[in-house]
Image (cartoon, rainbow, N blue to C red; front, side, top):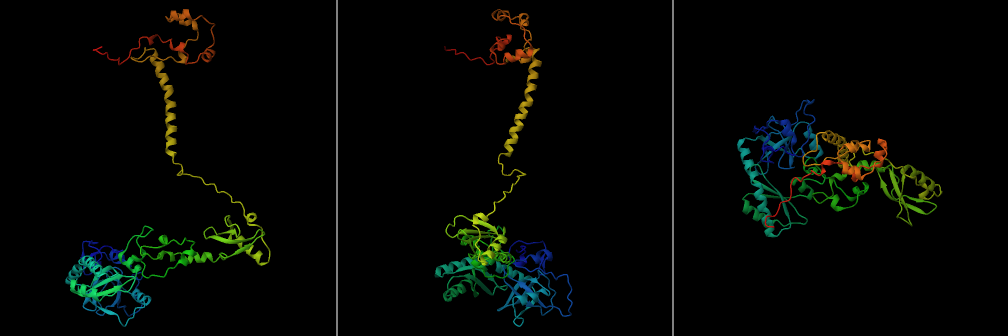
Length: 467
């Protein structure tokens, strides 16, 4: 992607406070971050030959690049804004590559050195002003051009518009499925924009490279960032990688097959070279079996009988090779179900308990129960300490097991004589036996509280005056 510098012509944002015709203030950060740029890995190496490379690579809007010759020996570096030769007039671009790598790029793209154009000068302030004013008109011109094409009734789409550096020519990039007649369209464009018109048809992949976007992987499109050439992609690439032939999943933003399908194709072809052919058949005692699936990562092949193809049996490729060798010797192998070895289940330990959705709630429940158990003896101790001080106001006093006298005859001195007359005396029992025979929920124990009759309601009911 571009760094956003005004000298690159891609955005209205500047990458630094200083911007001149020589380029950005920081050449290393700005000059090497252009879209579809080439990293100069020979920048720190001196040229061993005496002759100096006079060719430079100049980048224009989006992915358009060309090579020019520095006939005047102007000191140029990556990020310099230059004025170059064009037909007609001149154009303004940014230097994207210098040095010996330019020759390698020219050889790779088969660019002829005889027809190469020359660099006039470094762009002055007037060239920059005219160039930037022309770039500001491009969005409005593109919308107007689409309206004119729709009014005429042409089946085409104007993808992008590019002004030349001196505003003497406009290039319209368009996409169309069929041939388009431009005789009437060029007349309309020339009358509306009052300049020379140039029409260039591009493919759908070139359209995606110019417009840009986000792919299904969540990153920017490869064709708009670093991919310079478009290799052919067919459905066999998806078959080699065991992918389902689904056009919606395999197609990119351009509507064609994704370019990234070619990235791992060599690795898959290398792995499949160790596999038997997918059309392999096995002759068993139960019948003939055919290969129904291949797993490159697990190095397994699935087989099923021709008569009953619902049951699948997976085998390692080493075992399959041995079975094929037996068939070549004329021997039939055992049935697939006898050859299948039971899979040993792999026990996985969930160390962080991600699969347990209630892991936080269980911890809280255990802590709450523990806190309740710890608070119970403290409350009982407070009740025993408050027994000698008398009952609290508005709340009756509760008796515990330890408060009951060991000898039942001690009730005679407690002042509760009516209860003593109603209940006959019994033989004294040990303390432990008395606690077992009399449960704490006995209603007679509740009557031992002498202050129960003095209990008053804190909020008595209101009386109705009109009653």
